[in-house]
Length: 96
Image (tube, rainbow, N blue to C red; front, side, top):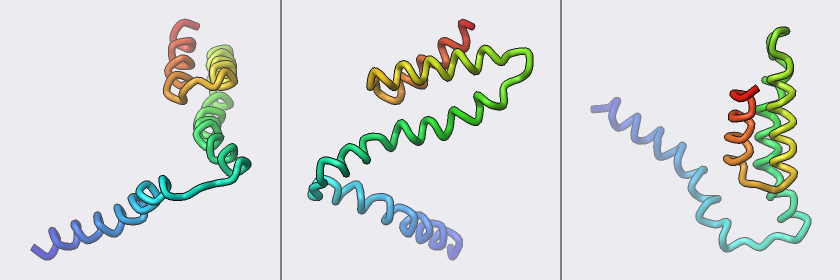
């Protein structure tokens, strides 16, 4: 029983710091520069996830990394949703 209470307690302690910003973000107003900065976070995170994979491609399949990376850059430049950018890159790598 103590383990169950401990697990629920840890879940609650983990959930609260994640839920509070999501609830309060609608009430907060940011300046134009802050809004622009926050809008770029998904693309920055995506770059941090994709770029190391491009650099670690096999010597035989370097072009697949280049094709996937360029596709991601072009789709992100058109300001498409992050999921579209990721899926587009995956499809292009599969076709390459």
